[in-house]
Image (cartoon, rainbow, N blue to C red; front, side, top):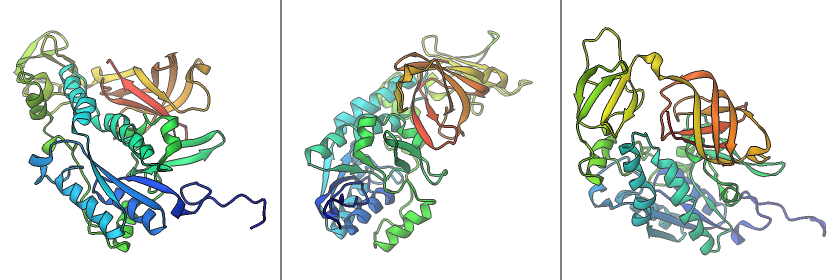
Length: 380
């Protein structure tokens, strides 16, 4: 190498040898984060594995499909032992309850439909855990998320994953520019989950065939209502199911059992037209229902915006971007009109059905790749 030539960058983007680069890997015990840790250890990096105990896993030991439960901590520790790097378990139960679980319950009580996985990434994994990584003198922190970090003209940018079916960009929109500078996502470019499992098998990891987690980690079997009732006794107070025209159609056993756009399980059969939940009124304990057409909307108020564009959010009167208002829906064309540095009215070019307070609205470039941030839908 010529005298004045800059040293080559390693795979994590640092101009030094992997052995001189310390990386903290957030390990959930699943195959994705295990492969990240094993891959970086195999490449010679100074790897430190960290697993967060996020809730009392005593009752969850037999529960499959949840992250950070007892078995998952064991699995993460075993990977670290197999690959020969240190592993730590940190007790974040109180932090997790205050930052994620309490808001989850209160959001449902207010008639919203929360996305706790986003709050967990924002308030725990990419905040407190990231601080821990810095305290350990790590050069960066790596995770098993399916999202890409690409270097643009002004620095790191957030991009959707190489495999659209695995893309987690909706759940990571609140990643700040400062966090993005420090984070790495070694699996984001892969084209399929099969590639990840092939790597796990190549590294000889026992978790190679471990099933993916399906539920929110603290909600067994997807039963949100029972969790909320345990956290907030009396939350399941009965009330009326009311038609938009004012007719009382039936009784319900608690607003927390319903979400905007719901059709099944309303218990109001025998009517001429199919009815959907179009609004929730917790104060009156009413579930308001109406025809499918009543779900359509084009104007979506968004707040707590995290902006990742090259210019300040208010530098333009409007931004023409694509937006995703549910994790399972494709991005749609929209016009964003800032009303403050962290608030906007999003105008959808085509009306969407079932826009629900508490969900995220995530902004994308027209090619569907670059993530420009997002915010929280806060009223219908």
